[in-house]
Each structure stands twice: as C-alpha cells, then as structure tokens.
Length: 457
Image (cartoon, rainbow, N blue to C red; front, side):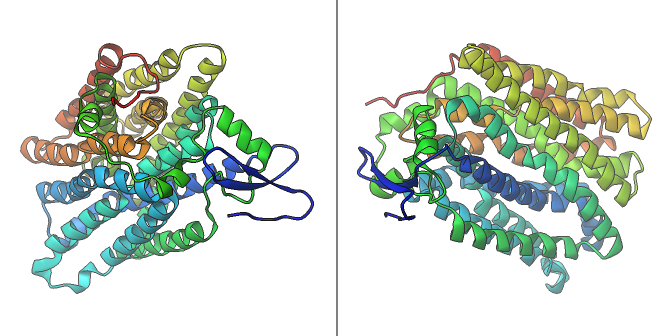
C-alpha cells in the first residue's frame, strides 16, 4: 500500500516486495509513541487483573466465599491464560500483532464489564459465573504480552530493546500504583461493581482507537525512511507483520521439539515462572494480606499497595536502562541481560523478612524494596525477544508467557491453602521468596549464552 504526502514523500521498496511510503528528512521517533500506546494498554490490562484482588474482600463477603474458594477463582484466570498462550502466539505469527491485539483488548474489556453484572444472576450460580468470567478474561488476554514483545521486536533495535521492554512491562506497576487507590476508594464508596464497569468501558474505547490508528513499522505513515533504516539496521524486525500476512509456515515436529526442549529456552521459561509467582502474589493476595493480616482499611490498602508498585516501576526502568547501558558499553548480551535479573531477584527475596516485622508501614517498606528488585529483574521479555528464532517470535513468546503464567494457577491456590490451614501468611511469604532463589540458579547455571537461536532444519 502506497501513501503519498506531497513533495516531501518518497516510496522505498525492499527485498520483501513491500512498498513503504515515507517522508524524507530528519529521523522521526514514532516508535516512542507506539511504546507509550503499549504502555497505556498494558496498564489497563493489569488494572483489569487487579480488580478482583482489590474488591476481593467485598466480593467474598457478598458471595460468601472462603479463602480456598477465592484462591480457585484467582487461579481461573491463570488456567485459561496459560492454555491459550501457544494458540495465541500462533495467531500472532499467522495474522499479525495489530489485529489480534485489538480484538483481544476489546474482548477482555467486554468480560470485565460483564463481571459488574454478576449480582443479577441467581445466588447459587454466582460462584461458577464469576469463575467462568474470570477464566474468560484470562483466555482472551493471552495474546497481549506476546504481542507486546513482538511489537517491540519490530519497532526497536536491539540496543534500545531492554529499556523499551522494561517500559511496557513497568505498566503493571503503574496499574497497581494508579488503579489500586482509585479502585479501593470506589469500592468503599460506591461498591465493587463500579470498578469493573469503569475498567471495561475504558478498555473498549482503547481497542477502537488501536484498530483504527495502528500500523506495522514498514507501513506506518508517520515513520520516515531514516527511522525505518535505523530500526532495521539495529536489528528490529520491521517487516514481521507483513511476513505474517504473506507466509503461512508450518513447523516440523523437530522444530516444535526444539522450542520445548532447548536448554536456553527452558532456563528462560523457568525464570519467567519464578518472577511471575511474585507478580501474582502482589496482584491477588497482597491486598488481602494487608487488610486481613495487618489491619489496613480498604482505602489504606489501596494506597499501601501503590507504594511497592511505584518502587517496582522505578526498578523496571532502572533494570532496562542498566541492561541497555551495559550493551552500549560493549558488554555481551549475556552479561547485559543476566546482571539485572540476578541482582533483582536477590533483592526480591527479602520479602520473607516481613515475617519478622510487626509495624504495618515498615512491612510496606520491605515489600517496596522487594518489588523494586522484582522490577529490576523484569528483563525476561527482552531476553526472549533477543533469543527467539526469527521465524517464530510469537510462538516463542507465547510458550515463555504460558510457562511463566502457570504461576498464576499455582501461586493463588497454594497461598489460599497455606492461609486456610495455618491461619497465617508467614508460609506464603516464604513460598514466594523461595522462587527468587530458584530463579537465580536457573539464570546462572541453566540458561546458556544469550543469542539469537536458529530453528533446526
């Protein structure tokens, strides 16, 4: 598709046969606007996931749910999210990021909006209905993070990818920091139904804007030849979505086995599982921990939960910037990517110290330090972007995210049982901290050299 923009336009045709009409002149920087859009959508994504944690006390009281029941409901998202990762990654590779991402955003917003009306179903059906809707939310959200990774791979050169990945990934912390106090206040003032209505409507508006305004780098009217060349020469896969619409490649059994058994990939998958266990503790049980175990009010819980989230945001930006700085200083990708991860997970393991502290706000301070470390370690999406075979970035990201989010199934259920059986959160914090140690072992002794992998022929 060729777009004309008057005398300042030119058309460039690359070896792929795809015409690219661009403006000649000083290099544009549209990739940062795209990153800001990804950041906003990801914040909404995690805001939707946080709704049940914030409203958990009110919902459990209204529906008469036990901690074990809440654990299973929390896990419903994870079951569906994990099951749809590989199909979601396949959809991205086959149909491209733009369309799949937009449809996913619209669908998950509809699910969020539907939860607001759950009080209108018969009481006996409220638990299964909530379980199914929360599972549906996970099902349709499945392609979003692989899509984020895929889009960043197409818009950003390798030397900028660590920070870009950390920025979109840091939206999870912004979501908790911004939405947690707001949703805590809305829940206490108006009722829990309103937060689901608000988040659902907001997501639907963003989906319409995304589908109307977003293009791939090679076809975007706002990208000039200089920016496109800069991205392409730096290792950005600028034609990835155009190839997805033109090439329908079938993987061999040998190639699929490679994606599931390669040592480097397995280590990175396992590391993502460990760091995601921390994330799901913060998204699900952390607000209940503050409210039930430490005596915070609902409003105070929302504000207290936002402090570690802001520290996680700072850690994510710091970790991504550190990784890219090491690359620009001539360090290998191996050093540049592994250093933030190992240091961050070591800091995150401090979460278990809260078992020895009585002051509520000192606990928030320790949690904030742990979340700062978790943010520094959130470099895994840059790693999978760096190592995924060029033919299957969506599938690699889908498996990576699928394995990681098995923690979304295991963590809420295990913590639910720990709390129910011990009447304490102490064991839960030890359980979460142990994942940090396992993660460090995986990156130091299992993950090999970080480099672009090639599919076997």
